[in-house]
Image 1: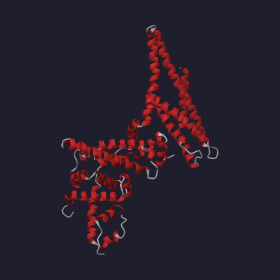
Image 2: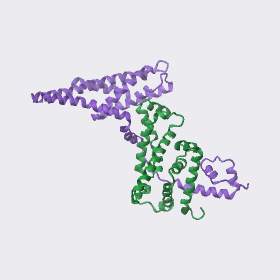
Image 3: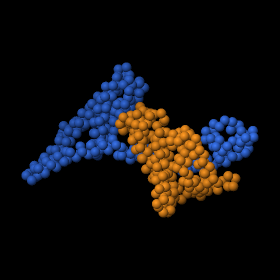
Length: 191
Length: 234
């Protein structure tokens, strides 16, 4: 018997740990992807995955089943990520700029010796993309990641961020404009 | 058409292709088509954002990390620690009390205490498996018209509590085989405990297939027999 998300959430709400385990195992990959795209750092993403599920467990009573469980979980992960980004900003203000290098996701995920093809084909774009993402506001980055990488529609993003749909839509638009400007060098003068 | 689409509309079109009239307009307006192509190129290239891969067992790894922090697990662990420590403390007090009198007798008492605890555990495990076996047999032989799952659900809930405790004990004792069996059994008990009373024929069939395909009843039967024999030898 395969648990549906809503049935498992209901059972977990009634104290059934196995049901919560089903949800954790089912959604861990997607939560990790979102957390990584939000933070750009593998270890931080792992911490966020754990924090997301712990918050979800504590807030299960608030899950009313109107939204899909995955969307609800995204909302929690997005909020955890926003908290993380704010905390990181605060930490950065107190640290030397050399710490920034250790947070660079390229250092963490790139292979030690990338091929020349990779460097020429995607290296420049990746090098431009990551700092550009970091320069977005928390709201813009979250909205863009949810829209662009997670395929959420504007209403889902608005619910995740707790804002009106117009605000969510505008955040995505602003993010795209900033990214286009930042990535201009990769596309030449035509952009 | 002299009017052009805005950047925001082009962005909407990139993501959900639902802007009325845009597709038709692009075929006739080279300016909008060019803007759309540039936007698409940049956004497509931004998809090249490498995310480290996680293996198929990643969900289980996350669960292992999350479990100790769950409120329920914490309270249960505390209770288990108390439960595990109580006999040990009692034994220590007893040993301290008589230790000064008869050293030889102290060793004998400790040995008896350990044996007695092991025997109690074996009896509890054997009884638990016997009762689980009865329930599994009823489920395997049931047809939708003959079974009212209300009784099984209630028994499954009782068995679950015992099962969790025994599984934890087996894990702590390093008895991997018993722990694995109890883990398998726990999943089935959970499904039964959470099934509706008037279970659908397909769901009952799925449950029966699962019990049979995993050879669960057979494993429970064998383990129960082994444990009973072991208990008799003690």
